[in-house]
Length: 342
Image (cartoon, rainbow, N blue to C red; front, side, top):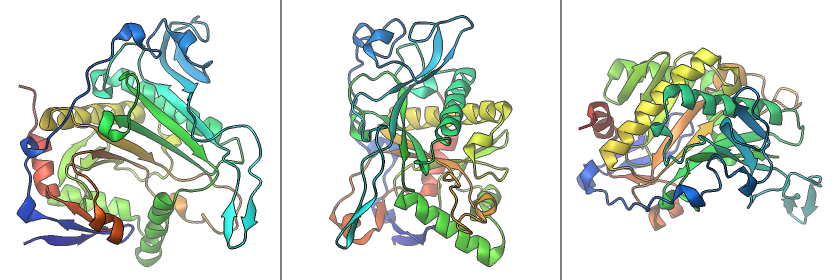
């Protein structure tokens, strides 16, 4: 019989459709052909094909906008929001609006023409994570921005376009996204009731139950959430409580890089390199608003959500807000735990 499961953070319901249960090989995954490196604007030696870099992690002595970099951040050539101008918040009858001011950046994860983050070594992935940390801290200086989302689109079905060169994106927003606000409100409600972090309690229960635990190593866990919206949805969380990704030490970023690589590789070999999105959910910038973020350091917990794009959201989901997941997270976690090369 199908199960209805409630997300303990935001209260969202999902249907675990056990009678429609799908194993990894039953999902049809389409693949793009690899774009040639000689045509790729993100490869080392092609720096003139991108806008001037915003930031880069470089070899000692390497000059900006040339080769010799490990990770490079450039403005998006098709930005969703523009960095110049003022917000100019204004009403229109019952509606509210403001100018589309924000930041849209592309973080190129390697000078080599690779298609996936898991092809890098942990030391290289930790440099990508270091760039995330640097950009979050730098954008905090601009009081217009309340939130930064870092995300990746891998594969055409995920929304990726153009070159397959592995890269992630960053968007700084003048408002906190509704989905993140739902997490913040849910975490605060739980904290007000139990005086504990809901994410910390979730981690503790998943380590104890083990059924949805994928990996537990070096201070981080990877789990298939109890109320997974999508088949093989995976979260990575720090075991030590932390609301702010930017407070991670270099050692913590390296440990995160190791589990991140392993999780992405397990997803790749289990599901034949599926399209996926991942999102880094962090606490918003604490802009002055008396009492509003008073407990966020205690009740929120940054995390990475990885969503393989294996199913389509249809009318029922749009009409109800319920999601239908044909692969129970316990089964997904088992497949991923056991995934090995060869």
